[in-house]
Picture (cartoon, rainbow, N blue to C red):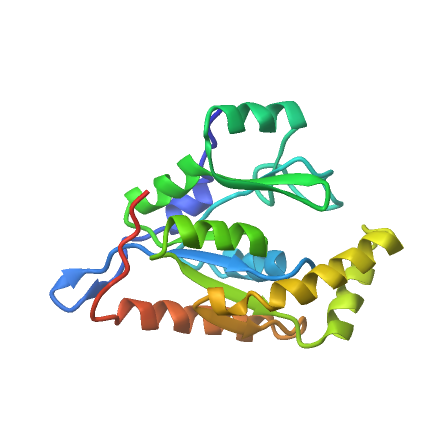
Length: 219
C-alpha cells in the first residue's frame, strides 16, 4: 500500500536553502510530546501558513475523531491493514499506544527526503525515541505542556477519553517528560500561542541549516 502526497504539500515544498556555497541537506524533524500537548494543532497551523515542509501522515487504527480527515490528519486503517504493513516492513517505526496502533510509513519519509525537502514527522514519545535510535541525525523536538493542569484541561476539552484513560494519559505524560534528555530541543506549548510555537520551530530549522557539520539522514 502506498500513500499519495497531497498536491498542496508538493506545491509548497521547496529545495532546502543553500548554506554558503553548497545546498543544505534536508532535515528530518520529529515533533513529539505527551498526548494532548498540541502536536496536531501546531502542524495544522504550519500547514495553513504554507511552511515549506513535507508532512508525513501517520497511520493509526484508532477511531477517527470529529473533523479529522483520512489521509490528511491520519491514515485510518483497520487492524488487518495495519498488520499487513507491519508484515511488509512498510513502517519506519510503529507502536501500540493506549490500545491503538500508530506507525510512520517509511515511503512517506523517504519521499520527502529524496526530493531534498525538509520532512516533518509527528509521533508519540516512544516513537520519537525509536526514530532517534535508528536515525541519530534526526532533529527531535519535544513539545512541553505549561503544566499538568493545563494538559489535563486540554485532554478534558477533547472529550474523547474516559476518566480512566485520562488518568492513564496524565500519568504517562509524567514518565514521558522524564525522557527529555533524548531530545534535541524543547518548546513549551501554550494553547493560545500557536504562532509562537511555530516561530520557535522555524528558529530551530534556521539554526540547523547553519551547522558547520550538517545532519545527513540516510534511511
